[in-house]
Amino acid sequence: MADGLNTPRKPGTWCFSTLHTNDAIQAVSRILDAFPAANQPQVRQQLVAGARGRDRAAACPGVDGVMRWPAIRNHDREPTPVARLVRKGDDHQLRSQISVAAPTA
Image 1 (cartoon, rainbow, N blue to C red):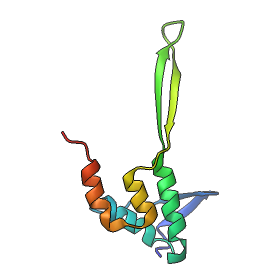
Image 2: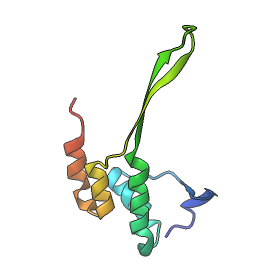
Image 3: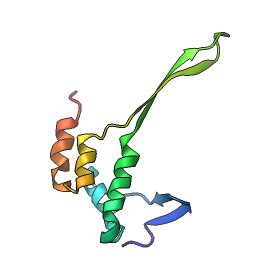
Image 4: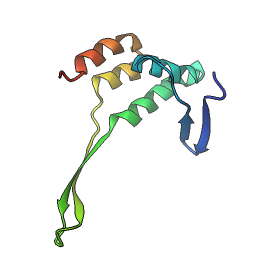
């Protein structure tokens, strides 16, 4: 475990230093390696929970025509296939799933 990798900022929050990795799979591995093996399942759950939600908002003009106000806020909380693999510990399948899920240009 790299003691200098993370420092507590406030209860329940950790600040990680820059991760110098070549891809997302190595980043997940580096984050997990910073914790004892006994804590890694919990860290996996927290990674998935933090990355799972997406907030979307649409802004509508106010009655004055200048101000804009949030009109819609939607939380998507369905776990993605990548999140499921991280949670289960199937890191070896991440590269394949990320390439399948990548948008085509």
